[in-house]
Length: 171
Image (cartoon, rainbow, N blue to C red; front, side):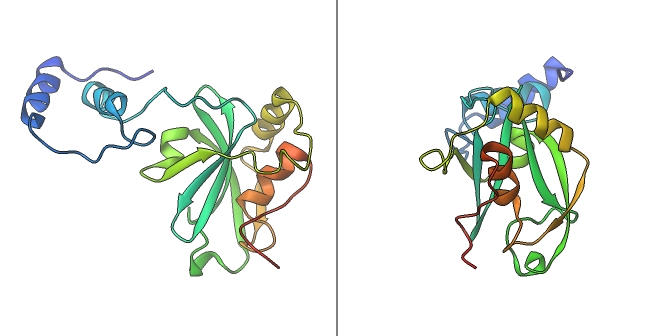
């Protein structure tokens, strides 16, 4: 997928890292992230055990951002045009949101995340292949985004369950 960096550069940088203390997190920066970053210049991991159709909750300060895993280390999510769907004051008013398909590590960044199929106890999830297919078909669309009435969580619970709900906001 990526071109390996020059081996002499990898070895030189690895030697320079010996003895360094790094922030370790099993989900967002583990030994696999480190090794892949050394070889390819991009920290990624294939250890994520999500299944297509799983909802991914990403913890970003006082709000969560949501994405849906569609397989092959890719996620679909609704993001504001400025990329700030975190519930900040700037995104509290209505704005446009764009449906994007991106690699898990690119969406999550350094934030903590988890699989959270939060409404499985209330609703039957649609078939994973249907969820992934419909999510892919939505990529590129511009939708009205409002942190209270239609945010990333609403968008994704609608894809998974056919019901647009958000547990992080009370109207």
